[in-house]
Image 1 (cartoon, rainbow, N blue to C red):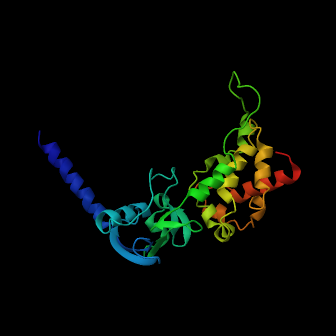
Image 2 (image 1 turned 120 degrees about the vertical axis):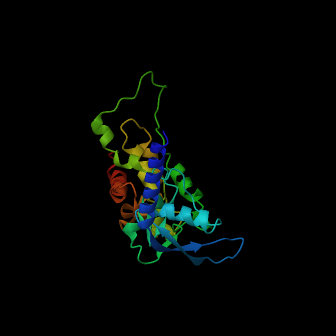
Image 3 (image 1 turned 90 degrees about the vertical axis):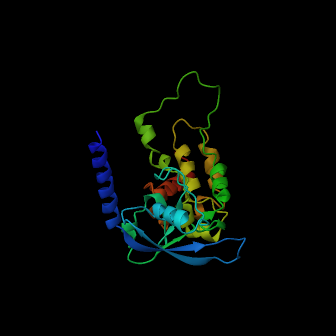
Length: 257
C-alpha cells in the first residue's frame, strides 16, 4: 500500500526539480515611495530566480514574501478581472497578473512603477478616488422614466451588440493613466469614464443619454481628447477606447444615438 505514495512523492520531487531548472535570474527595478520615510521616490533593485513563464505579479509576491515585506501594491483576483494591479511595467501600463516575465525581455532589468496621473500613496499604490469620482459623475447606471416595469426590459441581440465592447471595462485605470491630457490636467474625465458613459448612452433601454452627453460636453469632457490612441493601446481588455470616444463626440454633434 505504501508504494503508490512513494511514487507520488517521487513525481512531486521531479516536478519541483524541473521547475527549478527552468528558473532564470531576473532583476526587478521598482520605484519605491514611502511618505513616512522620504518625500522623494527612489528606485530599488531586487534580484530573484524565477521561471520566465511566471507573471510579474508572481515576482512581486516573491519579493514581498521573501525579500522585503514593506513592498506595497494592490492585487485581488490575480486573473485579469478585478483590475486592481494596473502598473507601469517597462514604461507601459499593464496588469501585473497578465504580464508574463518572458514577454518583457527579462535579460534586462524590468522596471515597475505606479501608474501616472494619480497621486502615489506608497510604492505602487495610487489614490484612485479622482478616477472613481469621474466614473460616478457620468452616471454609470440604467436611467428610465415612468412606472416600474412589470416585466423584463427586452433588448435585441443587435441592440446589445451596439455597446458590447464598452461593457468589458474593469475600471483598472490603465487607459486613463496612459492619457497625456489626464497627466497634465486631472480634471479631465478621462477615457474610462467616457467608455462607461458610452456603455449606457447607446443602450436602447436607457433614457438618460441626453443627460450624460451634456455632462461630457463640459470643458473637461470628450472634447479634451487628442486621439493619441494611448488609451486603446493600454487597455488590457482590448476595448477600442478611442473609437468609443469618437462615437460619443459624434452623438454630441448629431444628437443621434
